Image 1 (spheres, rainbow, N blue to C red):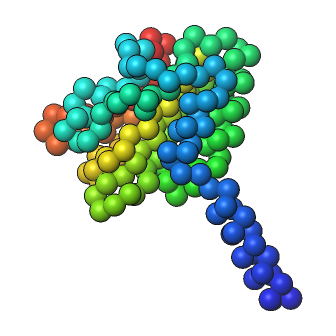
Image 2 (cartoon, rainbow, N blue to C red; image 1 turned 90 degrees about the horizontal axis):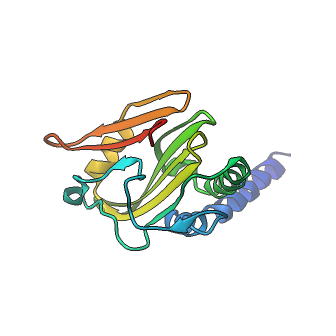
Length: 179
């Protein structure tokens, strides 16, 4: 009996490991879900990224996928597809996040070498009908640690995550009526 139970646990572990998705693969899948397209940054982006080049965090061609002004059926279709993909990313990779079914933000980090991480950022607002998926490579540990320790405030259709960095720099995600 004991041997059978251990064998079953081993098989479940292998099956779960086989279905795990890297952050890069998750971003590729998220950028291909219905209503989402790879885009250039614009004023609709709900993240303050102006100070991030000092931390290796920059937008490059092909690392931002978005959808804006989705109607109710599109929100459901896009949200269901996004959660299906995100459920394949190992939870151990999530460094911060919150979700109340009106707004959600999830941040994932995957170590790639010493002091370097790939980061996947997901910001979704059902109220605004918008989603933003961002994938950034070579983000230093210091930024990932700051994001991991950042407080999250959430109420209704408002979400705020603000990470304080060295000096006066800040990384933030703000979702509200205006964004």
